[in-house]
Length: 238
Image (cartoon, rainbow, N blue to C red):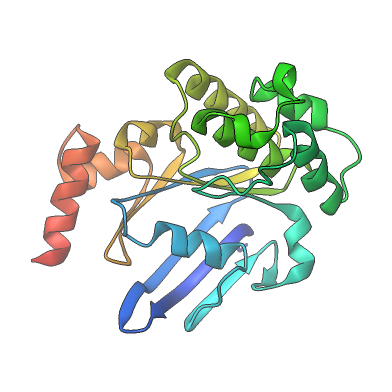
């Protein structure tokens, strides 16, 4: 019996002028899985996430989310997307931002829970423009998950977050995944890789390797994930 995937990317390529951001990428993400996209800056991770949520359209190949080929406006309410740069309204308060994103996604509650998760409930009345960069990241995360999406796309979610809060974030991510939420998390920080259930290593727009963190180490011949990544990248280039 064939397996059902929340995300299915089939032989996808995407170019910006002469630059090929993605080149024949194929991967699949199961329901309730935390899938990590790992690679250096400029590897193609953000482009792939934007294709998954339908902000971009592939030049070749197909992207399917929740059984629907993307882009598809009807799927958007089932997706939460936290961008690399906080996509917030700076003149509004923290709570007004979160309530706005809840409303446009048809969510009637969950605002207080989302603000408490990111430890911003006590700052809910603060205008976003007055917040530090780390607090804006936290507010952006609250906006992405306030409607309890089936698929949560997190592009470098822990940049600017202190270590203690990062641990709390990942604990919450795991509890969401256990409840059935699918997550795709991009990062260039290798020490976050072990927090993911499965990884896709990307460089120069290509998928170098895929598997659990242990499998990636085995493929790269090193217990150090960064060394394994470099070894796999070297094999692809040779």
